Image (cartoon, rainbow, N blue to C red):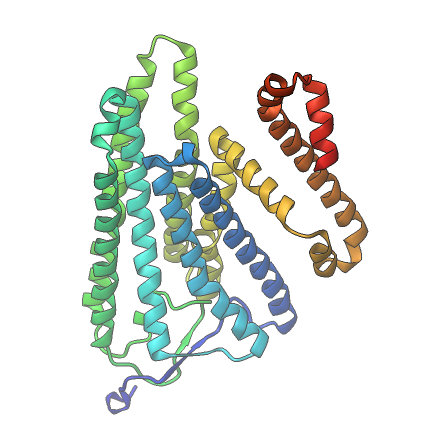
Length: 374
């Protein structure tokens, strides 16, 4: 290729996962569904932690940041792909491509550090329970989060600045649904050896060190739990760590799987399909893992969903789901009625002692009066 044609490109084409137009619209619905599930699921996790004072602990502080990071990660990549499919325009500006690759790098490394910090939190809670509140004080937790974010931003800036020194030729096409750093580097006409070495070194350090910290933490956790005298204490400790361990296995397992796939398979399209497993599936599955395997989170989510159902008007759901409005309407009315009934009974019990002492009323008469007035 002629060296004189080297230049900084103005646009890059994101070819996506397929060229089949009919299959593209199936992919559109599939990714839109996964995106909405990811966003709403993580928003529920954040609201549940914010509204429940029992969850204002370091463990759930880190989980809240993990949910924000997951939402941000999918919001960087998926909406652009959906717009490209809808408009049939696969172009992205060079500046937009660099920005997308920067934020993906930041959020991926930040996720690794958050998982490592969460493992350290469990290590301190189980191995040093009496010193937990001293070691994991709010100031130290905030420092851990900010330090992780700072290192992630530095890593993203380093890759972005190194890519600015590359020269590109014509026919810039990426067979992917977002601008991944490794895919952008492959388009360069100039030497990219330093960039590839940088990717390998930073990935080994910023993904390897948190992984080693997680392994170290769980070795000590398992050793401590096995020495516990009561079986109930062992079960509670393993149950507490089960959610985090599942998320770690999902994130690192899919990441290693994609790396091995890219080395074995020479097809960029198949590598792009495999990358869905680490870029979209873990953020979508994390809310399900923490809500199903964590009893405290499950109870908090029930409360927040109950509040939302009690506040949302039934006719709003009728407008959103016209074909199933009757069933949804009756279901919501039943839920709202049950929630109000519980609220009335709770408030009636609080007033029981005052009214009974003041006027000599019985508990049943107080509840009947409160239900009629409400």
